[in-house]
Image (cartoon, rainbow, N blue to C red):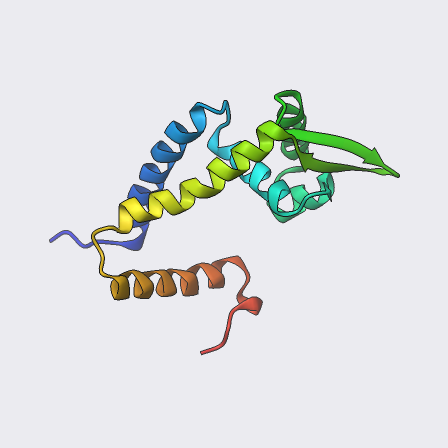
Length: 143
């Protein structure tokens, strides 16, 4: 007898989300990995490279290479202020931020369309409980 697991379900959903976002972002010249950097800077304009790297849990070298690539491709502006570089979105980055941010909501609508509103709310609440425990248990509400 086949037993459904969370691991299997999340793998299928991740694959679906990856394909969906790749199609949406391809026209902007952006990949899914770089999307998270653009979204972070869009939500934290003027952040430093160190803040972005730490917040996203990136390896320092990978973070720096990714930032320089986004600057080179016209998504980010990198300005030295004192001893640190601060990041802001350029016009191309603002467009990518809007499209990239919306892709999460659009994919959710597509995937969750088969659920009733109450089922959707229950599913998202349960998933939030699980992801909160994985990300930082000390910040999760206690039952």
